[in-house]
Amino acid sequence: MEDIVKAEAIASKIAEAGGRAYYVGGCVRDKLLKRPCKDLDIEVYGIPAEKLEELLSSFGNVLTVGKSFGIFKLEHTSLDIALPRTEEKIGEGHRAFLTSADPFLSPETASSRRDFTVNALMEDVLSGEIHDYHHGLEDLEKGILRHVNDASFSEDPLRVLRAARFAAQLGFDVAEETRELCRKIDLSSLSRERVEGETEKALLSREPGRYFRELRQMEQLEEYYAELKEDPVFDERVLALRDEAKEPVEYMLDILCAGMTAKEKESFLRRFVTKKYELKELKYRTCEDITEKTALFTKLDQLTEPGDYLLVLRALYPQNEEKYIALGKDYQSFLQKEHISGEELIALGMKPGKELGELMKKIRKEEYTRSKEEILEELKK
Ligand code: CTP
Image (cartoon, rainbow, N blue to C red):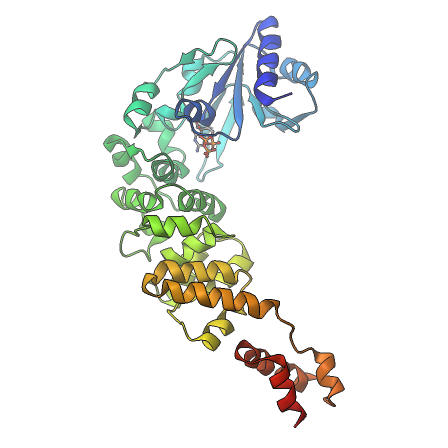
């Protein structure tokens, strides 16, 4: 059953049991903006957690994400079903909340814990009616990200990054009063994973530069992006090449770091890149404008995504774009051609061991520009 059809069937059962189901959060916003949405978040009012779980189980396997929070997932669907909840700050950090589910909370109260007015819209699953307790429709129309509530907004520092990230994704402005509030929020307790998540979404968004510009306006660039001295500009060309990258986030990180020294690049990335292999790969990618074949191929040979690195060079050095395209094709054919193997060298009388390994490395470089036969002839001499 398609997820929307399933959601409607669930909402009917809920109504029969005396409750009400609403779509909430990003899926309402995205539907109104005609953007695709990946998850359907549903909030259920008027039914206690156990009863809701029992009711849901007739639609499939129910995974309880946080039983005490009253959050359920229906396996093999994009449906997240939750009870309305209140959150109380009980310490520092993004996760230090005491969350209590309360099926009898009013939708207005429940929606006031949400970050932005456009994210606080609710849609009745059965009637399609929109409930707009915080003027979210007006902000959606005007393209404005405005926080819902001073106190609850400030309790979650991730929301500062979310404001900038949504601005980049939706092309929205952040309301001046929200910016003002963001200036006062301490971001130091955020985990690397959280910062990474927001950074990645921003880098993949339609206006990545806007994320960093917005954070600068909020005076919040320093905590995680201190090495960015100037506002990065990602023009249409750079963004078009991003679409060709196998690892678009890494491609964008290279462009973002283009003006930095290797040391700056490393300390910058360490603050929010959590995957070790990604850090290592990006460290090798020093992005100099090298069009000399052997030097470039030596570099490409060290990388897991040489194709992406060539895209970065094309983006950074448009004057050499044609050369990089041609060199990229050359490198492809180099990879496909037959290489001299260890066995062949042993057959020529060489002994296995460290020296052979060194020789193989030297031969690979020779192979960038010469044919296998030519090199073998020389070795036989
Ligand atoms: N939310 C919030 N504060 C947060 C995280 C989430 O108020 N720090 C609320 C918002 O109402 C948001 C909803 O929870 O719309 C769902 O969160 P999430 O899935 O993170 O965001 P989406 O708005 O769905 O957008 P996206 O999935 O693109 O991140």
